[in-house]
Image 1 (cartoon, rainbow, N blue to C red):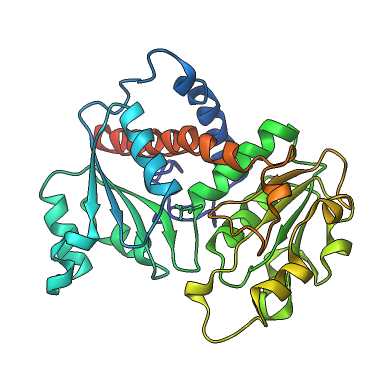
Image 2: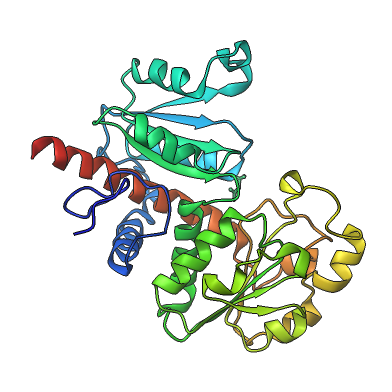
Length: 323
Ligand code: CP
């Protein structure tokens, strides 16, 4: 069994840092466990005691609405105690390094760090430096990876489509700066879909796009032909150097998803978006709020998927400590 930073010697998840290197059974295990948690929020008693007594620290150095909140909710539903580290009012502004911040939070007996950072590799860095009993979850690092987003997207697709094998999935927009797209492409290929397409202007595609195992399209309407799933991405302007686009208006004219363009996809195609959405830039409101949109379901499913990832990684740690 391959031993790497995120797997223990038994091949179980001890950290969750990237989709890269995971095999289909790893992803299916998370999806299956998430399925068992998905009904909880609708029940009268929503909590399970799986992580009672554990301390989970949300360590977000970059803004977030969906990821931070659903990680907090997921931890609470598992009965863990949650610390939301507030970077804005922390001693980081006084020159404390990431490692020193980490050491101090470890001294408060945290069992898990959920990390978002604008630098690619930040979560791996933290995972290499934490004490043996501590797990690290990557909640998005730079352009690199956003693995729990990818898994909740796979969960949403499986809920609507069942089998991954026959599916054609199009990912549309700013692939170049998207950690979500990179993680989705790996997850979709690992789960064995028929085809992953990326649809984008040349300036928003990574040079190595084809080596990611995708078919590249520059024309939106051609790329949408007969797809089962359409995943829209926003323009990640905070990660762009210089002007890669003429204007938001012109971008919408070429790459904005409208009802008319969506007619190119299969009649039962679903529309997804990791959020935040920019209405009138990459997606029209009629589509975002339309009957084929599952965008808010993605957010809800994020709770169950994050519960699954947290319980699995801390379970693997418990197994290691027992062994
Ligand atoms: N999808 C996502 O990562 O959204 P947030 O930035 O709001 O967490």
